[in-house]
Image 1: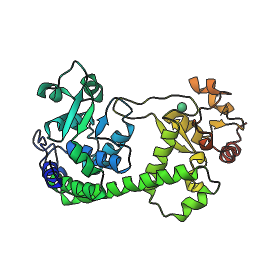
Image 2: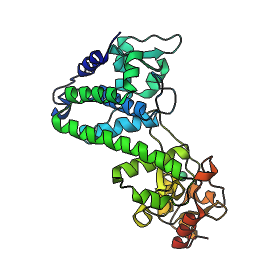
Image 3: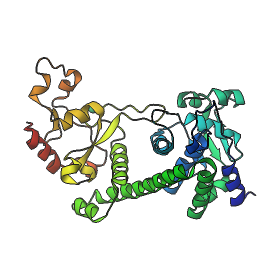
Length: 329
Ligand SMILES: [Zn+2]
């Protein structure tokens, strides 16, 4: 049976592409950073108990895994260079501790793996990946995760990049804690005071609030109802503050709504609001010539789409403050 030392070595010796000359920078030791970054994200999801068994599913919503992957990615890869988690998810199959779970009737070959550049394609033949049981047991312990993370960082990244990734790991941990706190406090009236008494970094707050609000609304826009999550795990909604953070310092879930980009803009500009009976209000100026507000005007009087749990609905005290500010009736 393999022990921690074996996995530390396997993590330090990942097979990483060096692709064409100069494509990967010194930050990632001139090799592809995909595999170690995906593993860092997986370690975080195990720490926060989102992944609770040694199977990483790819058939469902990949928002969380993709989000963490991108947060790490942006720290060490030049701006504008993007990637899909499909690359490392499939190519880790070549490592001893990660095996793709193949759909019935399909097989996985080097050629299939090499062709995998999108999650849509990955899903045509794979259901997920199986992590070695013994490794997973180690990943479930804090000391185990620390050793494995250290091994990945030291082997695959420059000193400076290691520092940036360590910082991101701390932000992710903080954001998970903040999220839990927001969920617990959602049922308490004095949420603002409680949150103010804790000194959270802006990056932690932003990430925690965004996560808790977008998931409470299941990635659906509260005003227009649009819900789009791409196969790569990108969601159309953002977490909006009803009374802006800069004025309210209030991350109460009930001071938030998941809104699509257009509705978020419309709400912040006072073109859209929510009535005392939770119906969409549109400003009369929205359709003034030469504006064309299109589908936004059809929302007038329609019921908003709140979270399932009533305790998490947007609070009228915040909605009415927004209505008064913009004189919405
Ligand atoms: Zn919308």
